[in-house]
Amino acid sequence: MVSSGLYAQLVGVGAGLLLLTAVLIVWRHSLRSSIRLLAVQGVGLAWLVAVIGLHAGEAALVAVAALVGVLKAGLLPWVLARGAAVAGVQRDESRLNPTSSLLIVAVLTALAYLVAGPLLAASTDPAVRAVPVGLALVLIGFLQLVTRRRALSQLVGFLLLDNGIAAVAFLTAGGVPLVVELGVSLDVLLVVLILRVLTSRMQAKFGGTDLDELTELRD
Image 1 (spheres, one colour):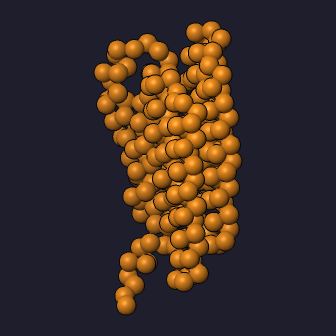
Image 2: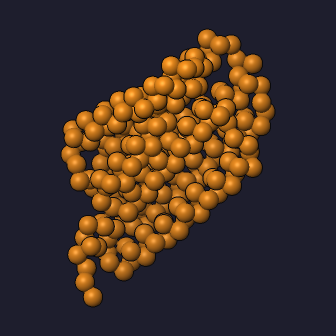
Image 3: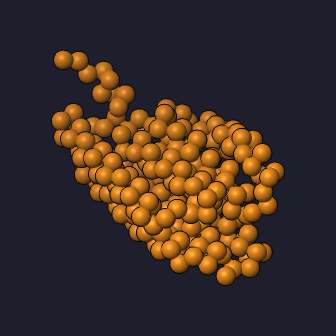
């Protein structure tokens, strides 16, 4: 059982790590760096789940935290890294410059806190008060999907969005059953594997994974 003061600090560390890695993913234009940051974010999410589980005294949540760490900090980033290596993609192309991207991220984060205002006013639980960070991750994930040009970069945005949804679920509901998390995580892994295969086929057939260039193709 973790004391209330330490619990609040540990939740703050985990939430801060999630938001910091999301901002850095948007700011950096190196695909390899984005994948590494995604792995660090997976560690942050697993940290949050473990802290919630230890505070509640629930061994099942600690097991879920281990599963989240293996999948989101290990397996999924590894699949992305292999895809980037096969495709020979190093740079993460964006439709926005870094300054504009950071400004939009700041606006989206403020919007997340504004939307979660009623929830924050109704609860003093440190986990619930970190919910805006999860909402911000969802919005930033959408931003990554919309502004990135390469398929693998958009896949990073998809996983960022998924991390945000998972964070909100854990922070508001105190976690989800192990079987449910396992099913959802395996679904995400399946989607990533399918998109990774499609990306490899795009690279082999068209010589690149820039979706803007592919829209110019004609029969």
